[in-house]
Image (cartoon, rainbow, N blue to C red):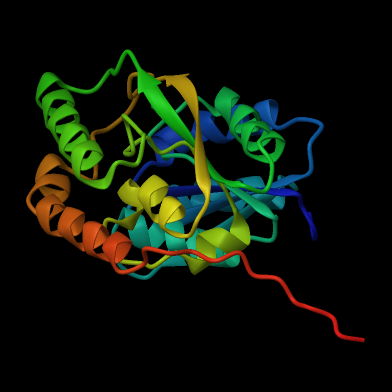
Length: 243
């Protein structure tokens, strides 16, 4: 596990019951590949630490990164990205709604697309969230797509694959994980999409709610639009040898 090719980053808060089956599914999906899993425990108060400790002692390719207090999903993803040892990072949510079967598909889609592509973004079909959450997400996605023109119908899907170095270079802010396609385009790279099927949550309830996403979303959207406008030209950089 010292030099894995792929790092799976899973941000979570109080998801011990879902992690119990989810991490087994991740290992099954990634069997035969060089990978590591980083669970970023965003200040959980349940048995997340104990559950992860047992798996690590059993020799699973798992690392446990912990926030001393909850800092939000974006911060948790970022902590995992900076801890990653793989050259490619694939993210997924810790609530069990993202199916780990798509992890290798996303990594392959990114790598097979070539160096011009910076992100393989999952796009959910047949959403299983509440009707209110689906309506809020649909409205936010339409508004975001119209303003940012990121060619992505569902930027909020937790399943995404990016080159680790590029991921670390993207401008960070709270809510950043919902604008990754637009931020990657800002750096001069393209986007490929992978359709994924959502699943119902088995245990618990969402720890990152609609108000957390919605009320600050307009300001975030304006901020990303401003960032894109402030970088209109992305040059191709080459070193010229005069020897």
